[in-house]
Length: 416
Image (cartoon, rainbow, N blue to C red; front, side, top):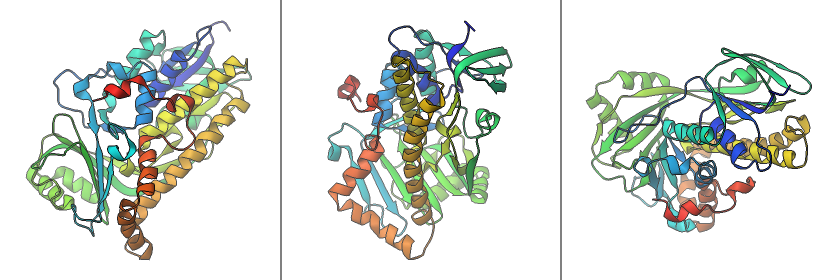
């Protein structure tokens, strides 16, 4: 079929849109035919508008990927919120005491540890850059698919498409994962994450603050306008009650769980709560189909690594597809896709297990292992070697990385 796409990506969120952009930006030679199936394309936030509730911490590796796609330059500087430090402590320690684990960008010779950016802003920038580069965005939903020997035939709400490779970037409840028969382990945490915007009496100092509560986790993410985005991961019943509480009652409970680290707090936005779960697909690929991002793995938000892991999936798959193309291999062939699965599944399992352990032994629990983990924060803080290891993980610059993440991007010298 002459109208067969090289790659069809189901889901135009940050991960799917990044994969699409990387495939076009690094194609060389005859252009790849790439399309994104996205029924709800967002608009970028209006200039001067309040920050969205849904933000993410984007690592240095993710920054490089957005730059390679042409999306980084499209994000207004006033919507970028760099953070230079992280302060992490347990409820058994004082928020400004010696047992607080402090990461500073200066320890790694970096201008910052990453940026807090609205998910909608990133998604809009990526899709706009992809479309401008010649990519095709199809405003339709997946209905069905059929895997053939040389192509996947996809039925959508707007018609039928064919592609040599189909990628599911359609989130934790992936229709692609279900349609191709891939299974996953799912663990319900019995928690919900409340997100909201607040002002604090003390300035956030471009610092991400995180407290392990014994029954959850509370994080303050610094925003460029001086406010903070909170991610408050707690028991689902308590989260529901707090979402119904008055703003004053909510702020009082928040101040208590923050242990006064940032002084008086005032709620300045709506509140939303999202159930938390861990998901790990048993396999990421079948013949002519692959999963990326939340379709393949979901982790607890306490380390802020969900979107960054997904973007590394996108970069790895893009690299292997382009390498296969240059070597005249079929990018949808299972032997190519299994390289991606072996590479990213091991990295994602390692990070997922680390985050799960943090949630189990630091955010919850009171046994010997939990007490050991709590004391470990102070031990790490006193070890420059261990701090460099964790900073490297936070920056996304350690582990087995795709090539595009290993060379410094020119934007970094001028990053805010």
